[in-house]
Image 1 (cartoon, rainbow, N blue to C red):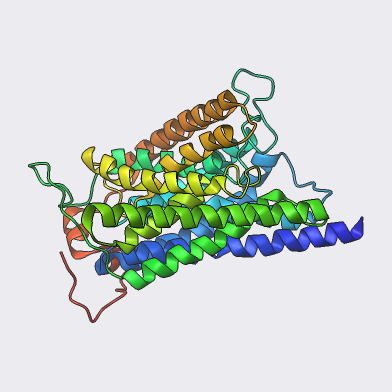
Image 2: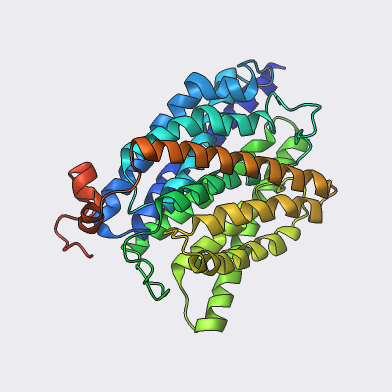
Length: 389
């Protein structure tokens, strides 16, 4: 009994540590994709999201989600830390998508609400205490191993609400309807960030098995991590092929987002698939990223990091893929997507709308033009560089 308890506690702590690698992963990815004049603001936002979301989950969110601290399988502190590692990701998804025009203070206030109320309620009805048990909206039967819907889609719906309220970056779309391309400022940082996220995903999905202290569970953890990696590979390869066929060029930022799309798409069911299904699931995830980026631009939904395509669309696809490639109820998956989607979008929209009335999210035009680093942080990431408009 004690040895299983000790091994699973160590496994949870190790998985948590891998997931925390996603904090610098998101920070580096976003810092590389925005312009140099906004890098410090993006990094500060990521730091505040991690700190504030984690503290809010400690004080209020965890108990709302799970109904208490008790855990007989491992140390209750390890169980908490593992779940705490997830919470900031929902806001990281959103913060990257509204970067370069959003102020830090209102975004921090929204982080508090997401970490203490919105995300914990989503967890409650899926992985946790289940306030909806026995009702028509009960979605506990949805199989979502590590959060295709619970985390990625929740963050994606919040981002969609935020973009609708805040609007696009200055100059992103012309009056004639054309798209002004705003290039990434630091490709090496984008690569570093994406690969840190990839590594973190092994703890994200593998750790969600919950135990590694038996032969059966050890095999299941290994299979889950194998399938996770395979889907990421497939997403990257598929996007690279599509880009070369269409443009005769390789865009590393899109290839990396294709990999992330594959990783998101496998997150719901990596524990259920054989070793070949993730190739197809991840490949489709890559295609969704390419199509999604164009689709959202057509609707003038400005997402500098492609988070809507990577997290929202692939969160939906990954949840559905479980029913298509494993023996799981299709309706149960669809119902989970709909219930979480309606709650996450509507609650986020209301909170963001009210916060925006009290403390405007969007920076003023002259601040956005000069860059958020100077005005929000008083510290430039690249002071020796001439800032671009």
